[in-house]
Image (cartoon, rainbow, N blue to C red; front, side, top):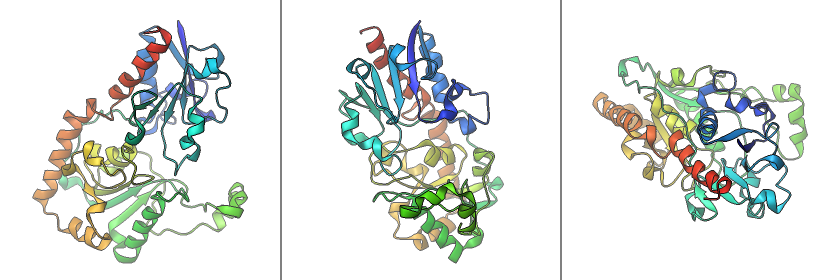
Length: 341
């Protein structure tokens, strides 16, 4: 049996926990399904994939790094068998886009269309399994708009965290009954700059936390929450990056039959049909967008849902952001290393 090592910076996923899809505390919203699927498909080919505390990188035939690790591969031998999967933009993980660090890896897989050359940089989209039938019963959508996001900050010029805050503020000041937002961490302040050490003081984070009247707390089931709403604010973590399209932002609401208000990748229409979502950049401000959302007729709204249902159930399940595409992109490259193809 050949060995493949999966390196993640999150200790929570060690001891092969990243493959435990039957544990709802780990596999919330099917976030780790793709790693279980990759492990399963590699096993059929005689390759055992395990986390790096089990299959040590030095002893493995292939090493797969999820984002730039804390410790880079040390030798040319390791770097020649090391793959890097870039999962996030610089606004979230700045070191991911330190190109000098890329030299430590034989092949790099990334969402970013602008760097793909099919020599060292290969296209690999974020993915999710599309398992559910899209609910399109408009009579069960008794709520207007929702935002589901954790409390995070970034000082990157392309970040969209502050734009989400702008949307929350706009609804608070203009139509507070038409937005609910959920997520973790909104009851704690995130300190930045010279005050960053205070993030280790939980009492200080609680005391100085801003109050958000529209915040409804964390959620237990994202799908069941989204399906109750007509619209979802679906901003990526950053804008103006071709190919940066993440499952939890646009595909989660689509699968729940909830129209996304999308802002992020300029080439989103290359991946998701424009008749399945509303593009924030088509509007001047929230006043104009809100008027459009409020004035959509039932027939027009149902047309959106019909388009979404067709796309998710007939295209997305085996498309660019499916687990099939993810695994079928990686496995041939892994086999080239192991079997010298």
